[in-house]
Length: 350
Length: 243
View (tube, rainbow over the protein chains, first blue to last red):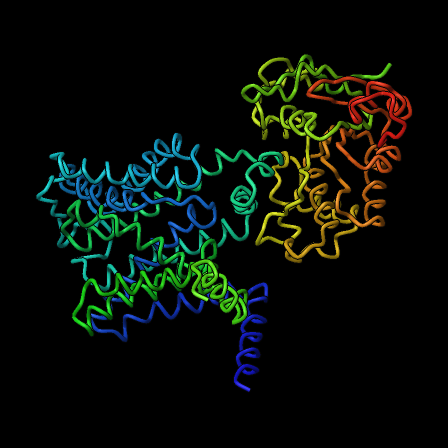
């Protein structure tokens, strides 16, 4: 009986999602909900919601190159950190407002990503992952030794009235940052949806991911398209890095350029479902809340890491298409049983 | 006087000590259907890969419509007018049949949606246009592979075993489509192991053996040629030849 109900609810959800305008309505409802949400939240929960938005947006940006294009970018966090430092430098050295820092961070990281993408996107699989990881490490070490980033002392970002450079924004408070993140995150989701799910460009990106040779034989310039996706996804990460830097007002290479930044983006996209719009949203919400809640209720800031480890193992082994795959019914009980049996046979447990 | 559409001169491709294509000189006329045959390992697929830019030849040239396209990137060769299918017909996953068609990089002047619809109708797979492509049968996947190539509006199409693994009725349909396209002026190069299929459709056959182009002629001519018998059987004296 329960199973029948599950099936019927799943079928109903599927029927709703199959409607042509379903995603539009879902997006509109989500936007409305998230717009009024802070009115019902205190400062603490607004900060949590803000963090969720930040990470959903970051995971979605990683999903563009990692999920849709299938290039496992282990250096994505470098652009998040670079965006933070560029914003700081623009605001302190050039004494320009935040909004200028945001735009310059985006452009700077787009150019940086282009330069990095030219050699690295010729690599594939593990080689690309290693090259991008090494690049991120290099950026972090560089930020620790050069003066303009504050080196090991880090960098303080100007705050206070007038620093935003946006009309009507006085002292930037939680509400301002919440809505800033909301705009960036919804913008990223809408862009990803339109570009990767509804445009010929997106079909070409997926074609390259699935069969690069076949794609090339159909006139698709794989190198150029991969580079565009990489540049776009990295520039978006930089925008989030910039906004986050202005929010936290102090940036240090060991924080904003930490490898865990990239790791979290990957884990969120993987848990939710690679190469899907819903995946990074679901993964971002779940992982960020898991992180905050373990810290809030268990007083632990690192406990969520082994929990995530177990989650990732579970996902990779039993539901490679993530939560979205489970919701779509791609992974059923039989699949889990089969995977468990295969695993047991592999390790001679049975 | 027929016009040469595609010409290779001394096309050579080596992999270490192995010479997979050894100085292949071959011309294909516009509007022709040319079969490419040869025993396993004779260099047929390598030849296709060299023609379409997946391998850079070590020596020799490829000329298409009078332009030297040797060493061009594969996507550029495709845009120039040479389409190809692969031995294993794999649709792009997580996409519908129509989206598979729309993924093709057509010239800017082309209305992609209209063109995709026309081709899907031509191939009789328009009824599944909005279905998930990964759920198609083997034969339908072959048709989709051909359909995607047609989006390029190529002057020349290279087909690697277009009917392999396809049920006979669908194989006949594929051959009918190829004839129709050929009547409209499309030139074909076809690698095919099934000689019954090949003799139904080709104008001429080129035989490769050990990377070399050993014979060219009509199907009947090459099937009685001693060099071909030797290539397939190791001796020209044997009675039974697979072609």
